[in-house]
Amino acid sequence: MPVLQRRAITVALASAGAAAFWAMGLPLPFLFGPMCACLIAALLGAPLKGLGTISVAARTILGVAVGASITPQVVTQLPQMAASVALIPVYIVIIGLIGVPFFHKVCGFDRVTAWYASMPGGLQDMIIFGQEAGADARALSLIHATRVLIIITVAPVILTFGFGAALTNPIGQPATDLPLHELALMVAAALIGWKGGEQIGLFGASIIGPMIVTAILSLTDLIHFRPPAEAIVAAQYFIGLGIGVGYVGVTLHELRRDVLAGVAFVLILAILAAAFTEVAVLMGVASPVNAFLAFAPGGQAEMTVLAIVVGADLGYVIVHHLTRVLLVITGAPLAARLFRVKPPPDT
Image (cartoon, rainbow, N blue to C red; front, side):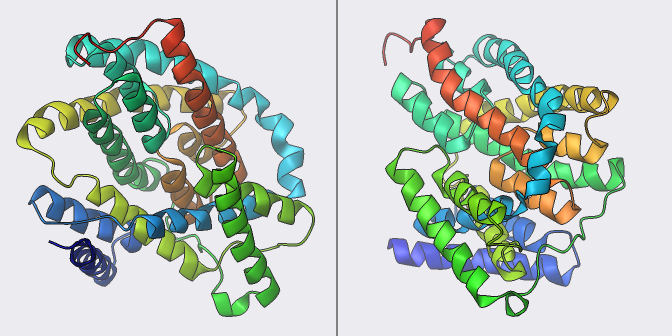
């Protein structure tokens, strides 16, 4: 089947899912609707296809949203976050000490696959690094996709019923209410940050690049608003679609081994995240909601969406996720060489 036709089917299913969730009044319909529709269709063998560059471009919206939230007031609060951010390296080390033996000894993966499966970094980064090191790229893809899928599904339930938070915070003003020159600056920041970040090899360039450029504009008093609500909704749509499409072609064997391993590891991560959330709250450095979102090991884009809709301190949450991802991306390959994590002989 032609790629264009597969993508048309994917968009149709994602749109139907969003419409169904909206009609039923379910939370985050433009995120969970496409995600559920595409996930179910993928598991049933539907010929879905991701939207490639369009989905990547949608992530720039979230980068701009985060950057616009980095104001002079947020910068003055950075020293207060230091104690909480200092917990992140400890968090990563403990995850690795538990995760690597779990995937290697319990689940039977080779050591290099176990290493990169346990690292709570960006999905694409861990797959690329793992593949270069000789890991099973398909297994890494399913394990990390399962991690993100479960966290983004369960986190709203915990926020609502565990913390009593409402997922009703306005995600932004309508585009018609924003100054045209600021909208133009946001578009420029998204494109320059994204493509410029790719040129210099910036990790997570589609989010981090626009975030940096927009933060500069915010700190220099040129931008005063987040992207319009319509843009944030579009970002949710493409993120949800992308998560669901990640399961295209999954086999029964992969479901039993890779996906179940991912599910079991998420339970371990949940316990660790809860422990560090409690530590941050007891230290008095964060509210329960902010601490929970900061230590939940989900993807940057997904956690940004949740932080926006719940009205959390976006600066606090994103600083912690950036620290986690930066440490994992820079440290995982170095640590793998240090500890002589090598692929099996036949790779």
